[in-house]
Length: 365
Ligand code: M6R
Image (cartoon, rainbow, N blue to C red; front, side, top):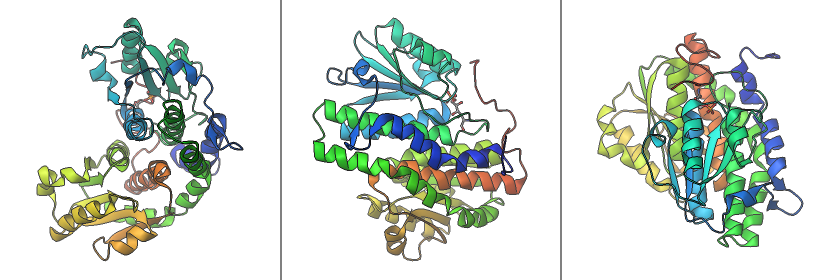
């Protein structure tokens, strides 16, 4: 049931404050301001020297964000790859390692094959899945369920942000277990995550701005997305969503890679989305933006009030997001990224919930 929405995707985008709340409440002890992930002991975070993550599509992008978190907060190196490569790479996996698989459906063939490869090689298996009775959930030693509810639209939206929410809490708790976060640091990170549903409500209020700029985007045949740090995977997500829903060719790049190739593409017809909250590396992204502006690229900057003020008139369009703590940014900035592809697709008249050539769950290779 779509309720009052035109598409399942719109409904699922708007459900995010609620389902993020449900998901976080399963993994956080709000009163104590502590991460409290049931079953986390299966991961052996105090013993392992690296974490393996594998998944496909948007779930893989959630894993890429998690790599930044586990490395920063838990000082745990992360080995991550798309499952279609991981399963055939013959990468060494040994007894006692921990491998995490992320999947909305829990039925993705390549992700399942990667899980089995790790299991056969003696690793313990964790799964971040949305469907608890799925094959991946059944074969895992420990399941960290996302409480996103059924996701009908082919594009992953609420499942993605709920995956991020679970992974953020896991990384924080891993940090406590490994002694790399103090109790104060944990309380402040968990406090920030507690505010996610409220920030999501504020982010959804940007929909009018996003809808307006999506109409001008609908005329483009290419687009570029740029971001740094945890917002680099979001650039990949923006490009994936735009391709999948509106069939506009798009690429996501780490902002610093711009001058190593993609800058050659920039002209007056190229929309460039810059996903950049005002964080410790914001100034670097501004200088990348200036390089784009100097070549006539049409910049859409997604940032906060401080970032907007510091960007001067470099960006033709600015989407002003709520001011959020760093750990929360990739979760909240996912919302405008989703809304851009949604509105562009609606404007172009494509089949939003069931884009051509795509299946919700890829159960064959
Ligand atoms: O069910 P899964 O999370 O394992 O699916 C993985 C991908 O097929 C999926 O995220 C896909 O990339 C989405 N259509 C993206 O919106």
